[in-house]
Every structure is written in structure tokens, then in C-alpha cells.
Length: 551
Image (cartoon, rainbow, N blue to C red; front, side, top):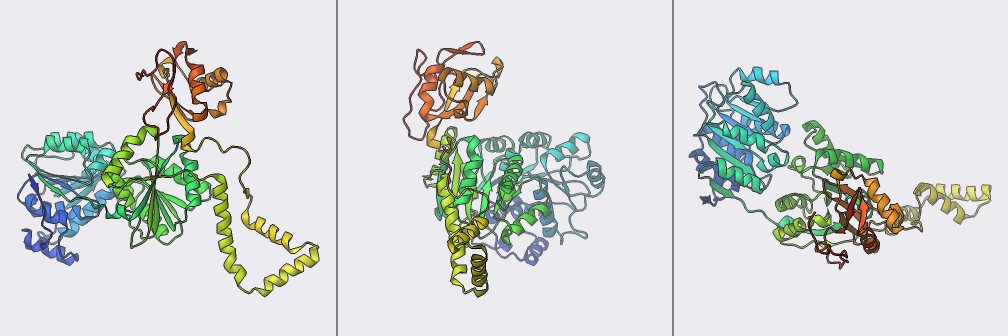
């Protein structure tokens, strides 16, 4: 069953109890959002529900208000469980539920957030008292159930909040284990910004005849953004990002990555390169994350590296550039990411880094958003330096236009005392302001950073053959006579090895390696992506196994 929410309603029209309505009014809410208008009536009626809407549309109140109305506060046991992907979200939801329920009963509703990082015995002690609602991460809730410190006997309501992020963080097994141990007559509400396949399977397995409330995603945040794609080898992403940040002029930049580890390491890398950068991810507490956002808003830093779950709710008007350092796993997530820019009528720009093996996902994103990404090239070193020189001139121009007799007199005094001409003095001052870096690009080649110069080949040997990257480099150099430096990223798997090489040498490498022995095996390498190379026509391996696509 699918319901279309009526947004032309008031909270008083949804069937909420007077004490809950009073709390909503006190908190300053007047009319429900679309997801609230669509979800609250069927949840009050006891129906299972799938609610899909973008972050920031009021999903918390959509499940919290019906949850509160169905509680029996005369009982002391747990009656509702809300599962969230992070401890920060658990605490936020707990705070909201308390606020909505503060007028219920004599003492209000008793809410307990449970999550990893807090001693479990503290939570156990709290569970021995009166707790009506438990809000926590799936791992910690499952841990309490296994220990017997949490009982599902009285639980009649379950909510899966931000279900797609729980999938992304690896919590889906715990979620299913919890639902398998729930009472057969329980009610389940599943809320998610996106609906990937595994989440749909969970919904089909555990929800009974659910009401679907879909708030269609809006692409206007994407339509106002200039979208670019940048194909770059994985090992060269950091350098490509540095050049991109160096050439672009934006007050604030948001760089999206896939994991907490990458967020922290990339932020440190950018800091070491002189960029004003920091990170936000789910492993940080709320105070730390708020501090990063505060410094971004006050323009004390320019770049924030973030994971998707941590960036939800991040709203900074002057973000002019979004960079997808890691490609999102779902097209809808791309829309959420890109929507962080082009706020308050400003111009926005989004650049997505990708590899040949990610071409299908890139095409899916373009189809979903309804807008193609314009291919761009990585800025060259000379182009980057020219932009930096231009920025320095822009800074000098207003200073030179101002009358500064003291500095003019000082400059003349230096010329007279040192016996040097004014041009030499000006060059020395520029050198001091520029720093130790080069003023122009070195004459040697920049390396195979341009994606059009890089091809990935597959060699049918791997870890089972005890192959190491050094073996691959040595074989290529020995058989072709090329320097080992031409070999790019090497990814050794169980049965095959992926190797990035310059396209100018690919045919030589394929020819010379075909029929040679590596780790005792006769190999015939091939192109890894003969059809997905961005349109470039590339040679195919020769020999009797030409076209063989088996590993």
C-alpha cells in the first residue's frame, strides 16, 4: 500500500493527543512536514511503515510522536526501541523524544540512549530502573539482549532510523538479529534517505503490509550546481585533489569520503600540504564535530573532509565546492552530497573523482540526477603555478594602489644604501612573499596523472602464486626494457593482479609479457576495461587467448 502525504494539514489534524500537541507547539512547530503528515496517522493506527525522505525533513518527529502516544507510562519496562547508526544520532533522537514527551504523565517519558564507548554496566544499571524507550546503536542493543540486561517481552514498537547508514556501517546483521527475536505482533517503522537493495529485503522480510510514504527527492539543488567528473588513478587521487583545490577559488570546500579512516588521514595530508582543513566523521563526539563546523562557518578553516553520516545536518551557506573523493555507493547519496553547495542563491560546483571500474555507477548517478557530468582534466603544474601567481598579483594590486610614503621612502633608502636597483629589490620582495616553491613547472614530465594516459591491465597471477608487487615491476622492467617508474598502482588479488601502466606503453607491455613466466605460470595479460575506458580506443592483447575475459 502506498500513501501520498497531504502537506496541507496541521498537527492538530493528525490525531495526536493534546499533551503531545502542546509540547509540539511549545517547541515552535506549526505545520507538519510532508514525511510527518504522511507517516504519523498510519503509525498511530498501528501500521508498519516505510518512510523515505531526504535528511532534514523531520523524520524524527514522524516516528517519535506516534511512539510516545502509544506508550503506557504506568508500566516500568521497555516498550519501544529505536535503532540508529551512530551514538551521536542516538543522543540527538533521545533528546528529541524527551522534549516531545515532557508533558506525558506525571514525570514524563523515561528514555535511555545506549551505545558503544560508554561502560555497559552504567547502561545495565539504568535498565534496571524505569525505562520506556531505548534508543541505541544496533551493536550495543544486541549486546544487551545477549547479556540478558534488556528484555524484548514488552517491546511493541521498533524504529530503524537512517537504515541506509546502518547498512553502510555494517550493522545490518545486528538489526536482523534483533528483529528475529522480537514479538510477532510488534510494529516496525523503517526510515531512510535512500533505499538500497539490502534495506528493501529487510523491509520485505520483517514488515507486514507496510504503508509506503515516499517524499520524492528534489533535484533543484543539483540543477543549480555545475557538475564535473575527473577520471584519475586511485593512487593519484591525493595529488589530483591538491591541484584541484589549488586551482579552484571557493570560500569553503566539502570533500566526501567513504570511511572514518580516510577522512582523518586525508585531512592530515591536506594540513601537511598547507591547506586549512579538518575532518568530520562518526567516530568524533558531538562537541568535536560542532567545533569543526563552527570554524568552517567563521572561515578559520576552508576545507572539511567528511563521511556521509557525519555530514548529515551540516548546513553552511558559503560552501562553493563539493568534491566526491570517494564515489557514493548510491545515486541518491550523490544528490544529498551535491546539495550541500549552491545555498542561499550562491553558485555551486561539484567535482567527482572516479576510476574506470566505477563507470557504471557514474552513469547511474547521471541518470538519477538527470544531468550529465562534464569531463574535466587534472590541472597541470604550470597551470596551478600560474593561478598562484595571479592570486599574488590580485593581492598586490590594491596595496600598490594605496599611497604608502613610509614604505616608498624605505625602499628608496634600501636602493641607495645597498646599491641595487628598484627592479632587483622588487624581485627579492616577491621571492620572499612567494616562499621556497618553484615559480614555474620543472622541465621534466609530471608523470602519468592525466587519466587519459593511464590504462589498467590484468595479469593472471595473484597471492595464491605468492606474487608481490615487486615481482610485477621487475618482470615488466626486465621484459620490456622500460624503467620500473612507469608502473603505477598494483593491486594483487588471490588469482589476478591489476596493474596501472601508461597507455603509450600498454601495447609493448602486453606483447612482451604474453607467454612469459611469472611465479612459474605462463601469463597472457589483457586490458582490464576494454569497453569502459571513457571512449578511448585501446589495443587488445594478441595471441591465442585474445578476448578471453576469464580471471
